[in-house]
Length: 350
Image 1 (spheres, rainbow, N blue to C red):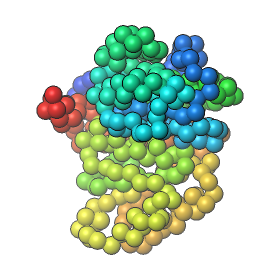
Image 2 (image 1 turned 90 degrees about the vertical axis):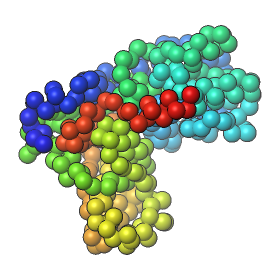
Image 3 (image 1 turned 60 degrees about the horizontal axis):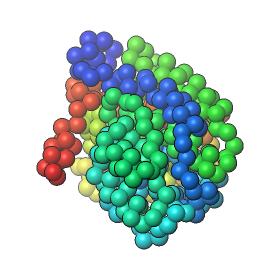
């Protein structure tokens, strides 16, 4: 598959997933600005927050919690479940239910429980049953317009949640950081876009190396949720197997499992994502872990990001992973938009 042949993209990418990847910077900026002006639920200073969602909605929450972990003064839980934990009760707990379609059954279940438990609630969706339920219960709802797959709306969910928590906790204004991150994303997109040939396009080259491989992505600190994002994008766009792991947790278990089964490990490639703002001990751990993997005969690649701040590194690494997953889909000759197996499961669940 020639990744420099424009005809392949037109033939394979029938729903123009590439346009959605290109729209992420605009999404991020738009959602953050909207979130600064949308109505807030009446709560004051919450004693705990639950960010409920699945798929692309939850990834946005993961990124947000990782980015703000050093400044948040109350526990914030990202929940990918049908049920709330027992401590989530009362008006001083905020439950934010996010669903692209507004019809995600796990998220709707959590929303109903939050109402029953007397929590303060906020819902985010493009419409659907979640918005209808919020209107019926006279609860705060933030809506947005996005015609595409939920995974392509991660900028909306992150931007909304960042604005929400900035306002709730009177955090310093993140506008300049958002602007810098958007500029860094746009610059990276110029370096990775379809018209940039393979020999100078690292995302295209890496996609070629991933063909026919089992893929594991590892990262640490604020880039840990980016490893999950790469995994899910490879799954959904390229329809390929991938998994993720975190440093330093992997050093306490995964590192011991690099001997067997040899026939599987020979097809494994481990991608390490590293940023310049990683904890210095995790930077060392990534280097030493990669060295041990290579000594065991496992294929590895290191993808590094260097930006002015962690937010810019988070979002440039995310956009890199989106391009990588997209090019892997094209290399396999598979349309990156449809997710037939997931839709079949949803129908079977009805």
